[in-house]
Image (cartoon, rainbow, N blue to C red; front, top):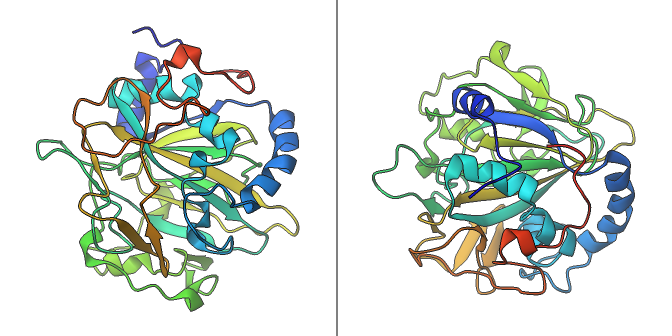
Length: 316
């Protein structure tokens, strides 16, 4: 299948070596800034959200692609899916999305990796087939607002995506009083009420930040990276600028999502998965491991060429 927005062979090589690729342009910067004004109201409106949560909960940003039309269309954009397919293969599901707001004064996010996403509860949320080389999820992180070094852009450690420095099965204790209260290496940074250092395989391990690269992005750009890549973000030291990132997480259809559970327990909140379902964004699902969300109004499971696009891409 021809994918006009796919990665070039050189880009694929760079991705395999570094664990990330981008940023890529998707939305016109001024258009997305104007769209964000409307989007803010939609984010606080939870009347159609699949989880019964107060908007102040950390998990209130989970899976809003299942009720906010903009994000519903975003996760199936060909400019994204074509690139993801070049990495994961033709049969792809989006299993989670998250919003990452960083308000003025907010701490940075500490260095971390996610393989099974068991870091908060100790229970795997995704399981790859046993013969897989390694697990993890492909993350597409989109800047809804400008993400600069001042407002808290992402940072990566290239080439760290094929070795886990953390043991997610150890779990971590949620301590909300630690939010915006931890300092490491002279910088205010934590992990949303957890201390990721508790998962280190080597208690004396200290990430070598001399190898880190910052990835500033204009509003409307996105970057693709393995969740197993060591990544972090800077604090928002601005006076009046909010940084909003939106992540969509993709895996092949052969991956089991939330196996053997009907709830998710993270950040002091329990999510009921009754209304949850993965979204088939490309190809077929011959495995039938996961409950698939079908929503013809939003275009889920449509042939990609038939999916309406809200705003043309400016570049690939």
